[in-house]
Figure 1 (tube, one colour):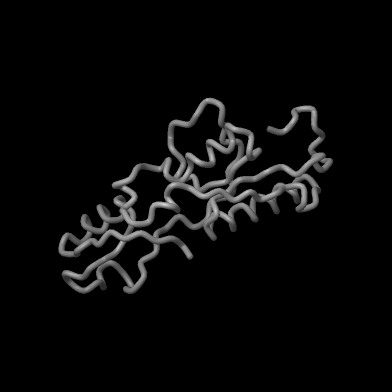
Figure 2: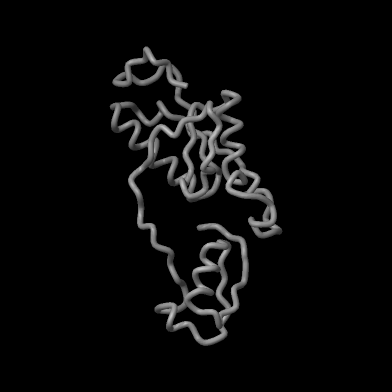
Length: 163
């Protein structure tokens, strides 16, 4: 944690350790977090060190996420690194953060929200998808929404990431 007596207009004595997941999206979020934090305080980028972590969800790739656990698959390693003092703070997509958090961990800041809409790839609209077509998703929520709109579609579960 940051020493409460520290003057935030001065760079910390040693770099603050920011722990994102190692994925390309998480690293981009971490770079943005570091840039915004350093700009807000007038610090050099070297004041915040990125310490990428590998999450269970990254290691287990052979099964759908719903079969192997919930949102903690993306955050439990970040939480453990925070609680063990290996990192000073973490960055992660709020959609994957569990609602009930450890008392020792505080969500201290949230970056401005990006476009929240899902993207349909391969068709101009849901109505333009051919009858009986297969639609792939890794999200049970998206599968349910798609079947609600188009019960004739076949939903195929798959794993993947932004990269």
